[in-house]
Each structure stands twice: as structure tokens, then as C-alpha cells.
Image (cartoon, rainbow, N blue to C red; front, side, top):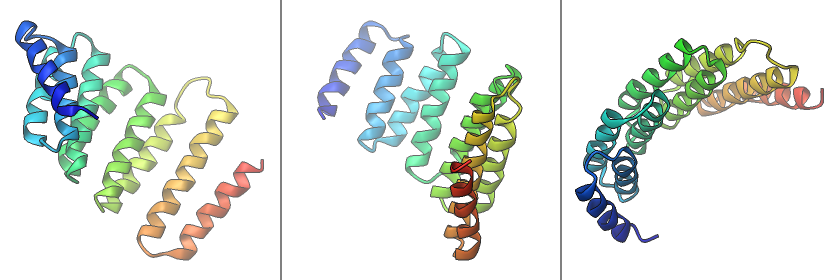
Length: 176
């Protein structure tokens, strides 16, 4: 709740350690919370450049995507989510890649781009199921998410019957 103070402390810390990944990411996140998006993205961009590992780079890229999502700039957010998704696929981390695809789908749905939301929810579902040795319970979670996503999109399109069909499928799956 003391964002101004946090920004001052982070800026001072970055004067002492200008190449701090954590400092730039924290400052960018805090500036985002204050609605200072352009300045936030400069800091987050610097964190991406300084990321010490692929995992921390992905963390910073997801933070950048969310920054764009705050302004309903889904196409800009997608550039960063896509990069994370691609790196997770290359690492054969299908669960994480499915999660990232679903995250991008949520950004698209909130921005009102239902076609891309559908595409990315479906991608998340299909990708998550590629995980080797996936358990039946994990398959059920992915199926539940996919039905829920289709219901949300149908509801946003004003298609009550289609939405209800997917909700009923979710409920049926929950009782299995």
C-alpha cells in the first residue's frame, strides 16, 4: 500500500546495483500498479534483458504481458506470452505451456477478442494433454478448464444454450 515509498527505495537500490534483475522487475511491477505503464515497461524490459536464466526471463516476459493486459492491449501482450509458450514447448514442459496458453486466452477474453481467446484456450487444452505420463486427474482438470473456457466464450457471445451445454458438461465431469 505504500507504492511511492517502494518506488523510492527501488530507485535508490538500482542506483547502487543498476544491473539488478530483481530491482528492475520489482520497480516495473510497482509502477504498473500505479498506472505508470510506459515507465513500468521500460523497467520490465530492462529486467528481460538482465534475466539470469530462461525461467527468470519467462517471469519477466509474463510480467510484461500483464502490463499490456492492464490496458487491454492483448496483441502486445501476446508477443511476450508467445515467447514464453514457445520456450516452454521447446523444453517439453507441456503443462506450463498449457498454462501460458490459458493465460493468454484470459487476456484475449478480457480484451473482447473471443476468436483468439478460443484459439488459445484450445491450444492450452491440447498442449496440456501432451504431458508424458499425464494422470487421469490431470486430464480431467484440463477437460474441465476447456469446458469452462467454452462456456465463458459462449456466454460472452450471448449464446446461452451453448454456454449451458458446457456448464452441464463441467458438472457431469465433476461427478465422475
